[in-house]
Amino acid sequence: MALVAGVDSSTQSCKVVVRDADTGALVRQGRAAHPTGTEVHPSEWWDALQTAIADAGGLDDVDAVSVGAQQHGMVTLDAAGEVVRPALLWNDTRSAAAAADLTTELGGPDKWAEAIGSVPVASLTVTKLRWLAKHEPESVARTAAVCLPHDWLTWKLSGGTSLDALTTDRSDASGTGYWSPSTEDYRPDLLELALGKVVALPRVLGPAELIGRFGAGAGDNAAAGLGVQAQPGDVVVSIGTSGTAFARSPHPVADGTGIVNGFADAEGGHLPLVCTLNASRVLDATSAMLRVDLAELSDLALSAPAGADGLVFVPYLEGERTPNKPDSTGALHGLRLDTMTSAHMARAAVEGLLCSLADAIDALVALGLPVSRVLLIGGAARMPAVQRLAPAVFGCPVVVPSPSEYVADGAARQAAWALSGADAPPLWSELASTSVEAEPTPWVRDRYASVRELTATR
Image 1 (cartoon, rainbow, N blue to C red):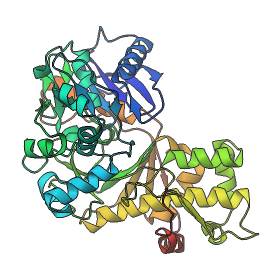
Image 2: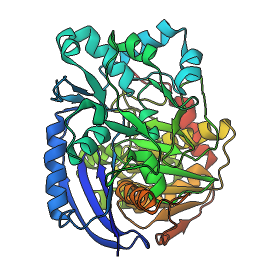
Image 3: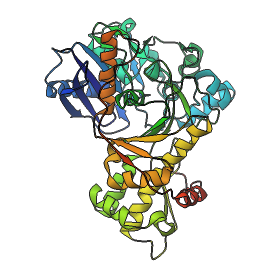
Image 4: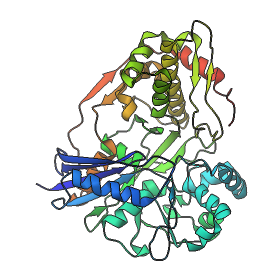
């Protein structure tokens, strides 16, 4: 029996799964925590990966390995391959002003969308490089290469020491802001525009390419798409640290509004994606405020009426990426004596989170992508209130796959594909799932839409 391993180096933790390459059956798994914060030294990821590998029984008997990881994180290396400074993660918004400057300097949002499929926001790597150039010129002077979290981990796992051995994949490269999904090439001019110089970048591998026993890897959303075996017509909505809505497309996407990112997928196609900064942490923060656990929060939300009697929560607690409001704050509208209850607040929090994600789905539909059902994944997708209210807010059927490490599973499936040499990823047994339908509640979204712009800035 050939074995493959998939890694998910996410914002919060590192997970490793070992699976049968032919059937996808889980053989063993392990995990380890990551430190909190938006600025993390890559050595912390490496230590967590080693712990997770040991917890999973090691990789000595594994035939192929692929790494999936959080996207956009800026990893800077010097000429000797040493890390120059801690990585700025996707959720670090200090580069918001840099994003605005870069957008203007190239000629506006449409120019960026045409060039790289996305419009700069604080999440993209290119904006973090501009921030570095402005605030830490001494770090720029030392920087000889720039890569991403999954690139660096794959390089370390494979024993890489030379910068020439750095590799990445299409999906992660497409989130940098200096690689074009339409031409499949780097844009060194955009790299230089941001950083002030051209440095070494990882070689972009094909989705089924194998270097030694290591696959190309993928960004977390593309890997999750592989993990749930998403099909055309499926929109995957992931509610983790960030919220995302994405779908497969055979064609590149360029959205000048900046709402939809024209990323690449992990199968050779494209992955139009909308991202929100505020997702599961909205529920965590609400449960902490109400002094209840998440199960109790769910019960409270389900005990209140649809629409929470007019109480609306706009959940921009960490600024927001979609819409692009990095300095925005959250807001509560419709407070009255009768709505100042724990149940109403819980309902408004869940509905506000889902309305934000429904806006993301609408943005994909506006570009002509079909939506037959939503696959709901991520930690918060396990909450009963989220499952029951999602189809009502989204207005379409929702399928909730059984809990699994979808990103690590997708990375393992990619490793199996690369190992097989086949033209397409293996069709593993589908995860058991729960289908949920409900009467749509369009007035909930209408009320949310009427107040979502009424937020203060930090």
